[in-house]
Length: 309
Image (cartoon, rainbow, N blue to C red; front, side, top):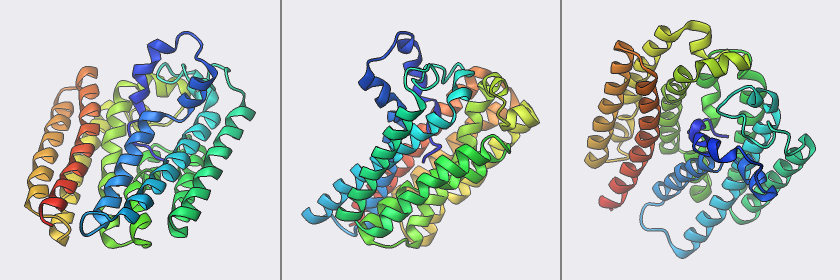
C-alpha cells in the first residue's frame, strides 16, 4: 500500500529480540509507523478537497475514511509480511517480524490480512463512497500483488513502477470528500510518486548487503553505489520541479511555494553531498530527511490552504 518510510521499524529491532505478546505480533504486521504516514497523507488530501473548514458531516466522513484506509493499508502491510516471510528472515532490518521468526503462521497472517481488508472495505463502502472503496482496493492490489509479488523480485525499477500505489493516499482522501478524482489530487499523487525513488534508494544504499543477501534486485545491488547516488540526486531535481506544480496550477499560494523551494533545495543538498562523497551515515541522514521533507511539504500545503481561505 504504501512504499513510504520502510525502515521506521528499525527502532523496534532491538526490543524485538524477545518474543512479542500475541497482540503485539499482529500489531507489528501492520507496520504501524508506515500506515500512520499513509493516513497522514490521506488526511491532507481530505482537508485540501474541502474549500473551507469541514462541516460536521464532512468530519464524520473523514473519520470513517481514515479508519477504512488505515484498515486496508494495515491489511496490505500484513500481506506483504506474509509474502516476504523468507526474504525478511534473511535481512537484519526485518528479521524481527513475527512472520519471519515463525511466531505467526502463514494462515494466521493471511486471515488477519483478509479480516482487516474486508472490514476496511465495508466501512468505506457504507460510510464513505464506492469510488474510495474501489480506489483503496486497487491500491491494495497494486502494493500487495503487483509490487510485492511481481515487481520487487524482478526489476531494479521496482520502486519507480511500484511507487504509483504508494502515491495514492492523498487521492483516496480527496475522493472520500469529493466523490471524484480531480487534477489537484493527481498533483499530490505526483509529488509522492517522484519522492519515492530517492527516499527508498537512500535506504537501499546503506542496506545494500541486506538486499543482496535477500536476493532482491535493488538498484545499488544491480548497478552499484555510484550509479544509484547519481539517480538519487537527479530524482530530487525532478521532484523539486514537480513540487512547484500545485503553485503553477493555482492550487496553492506563496506560503507553499516558499516551503517547496526551501525543502526541495535542502533535499537536493543532501543528495548532492551524497553523490560527491558517500558514507552510510550520510545516506541514513538523507533517508530520514526524506520523511521529514514529505511531512513538511504536505503540512505546508495545509497551512497555505487555510491561510488563504
